[in-house]
Image (cartoon, rainbow, N blue to C red; front, side):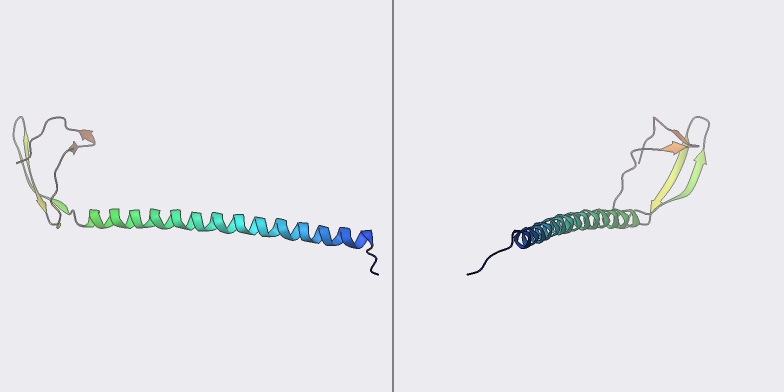
Length: 101
């Protein structure tokens, strides 16, 4: 009845093989893209959350009083979050001993 030409069968198999490779590459690319977008969106939301936290902490040096062995710094918090000062730098150098009242 039907006689298949070997060359025609070989071309069909080749086309199916190339189509399978293209589909597999497309799936891999889309999977990578979805994963990458998820990572970027979580990084962006973390950055926005951190920026919002910083906006709620607004410190201002309102007055200072210089004495012989110490300096009184009067710092006012305009923000909505309570803050705790745990590091102090004067002239770019870290101050090791300080008290917060």
